[in-house]
Image 1 (cartoon, one colour):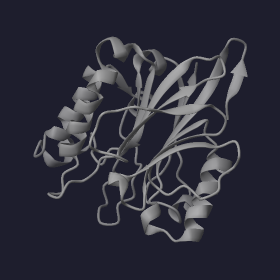
Image 2 (spheres, one colour; image 1 turned 180 degrees about the vertical axis):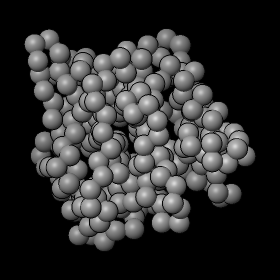
Image 3 (cartoon, helix red, strand yellow; image 1 turned 90 degrees about the vertical axis):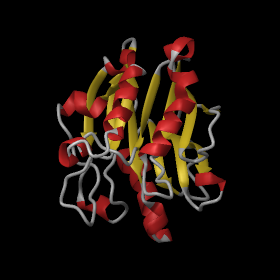
Length: 248
C-alpha cells in the first residue's frame, strides 16, 4: 500500500487482534489472506495471532508466543520492508514485541505491538503499567528521539472511566503515561472520540480496546485513520483492524 509522491511516501500501519486461538485452521488461513491481500498494510502489528507455516516470499515476520509457550502470540509483519527485532528487556514475552523497520529512504522507524495481557486476578492494567516501565528506556530521554509507532489490543479503554466513574483509574493513568512519553492517540486525533474496535459478546457498549499511538513528529503526518468493519471480519475475529496512514 506504500505510495511515493515526490520526496514523501505514504506508509500504512495496521493493528489487529486476530483472535486466532479461538479459530480453526481454515479461518486462520482466510484471516491471514484478508490481512495480506485485502487490507495489505505496509506494516502490521498483530496480537492473538498464529502466522501460517508458509507465507508469501515478500512477507517478513517477527513473531513471539505469549510467555514463550502458548500456541499464539504477537507479531510484526511487513510486506516489503526489512525488519529486525528491537531488543526490549521485559518479562512479558509475546505480549510486548518491538521491531525496527527500514524504510525505502533508509530511515528507521521503531514499531511496537502491545497486548494487554490479563493477569490471574483479571486485570490488564497491572501488566500494561509494567510493560510501559519496561519501555521507558526506549520511549524517554535520548532514545525517545526515535520515530515510534505503537499499536495493539491494550485491553483497556479511554471509555472505562466514563462508564464506571473512576472505579479503576489506572485505565486513565495508563493513557496519561502514554501522553507523558509524547505519544499521540491517532484514533482520537482523527475521530475526535471513541471508535468501536471490539465486539464484545457480553456487552452492548461499543468498546474501543485497539489503538495506534505515534510519536509527535509522525502523528503530525497522519493523513487518515480507519476502523474496518465488515461482515467478513466477523468470521475471523471479534476485533476490527485499525489502519493509520502517514505521509512520511
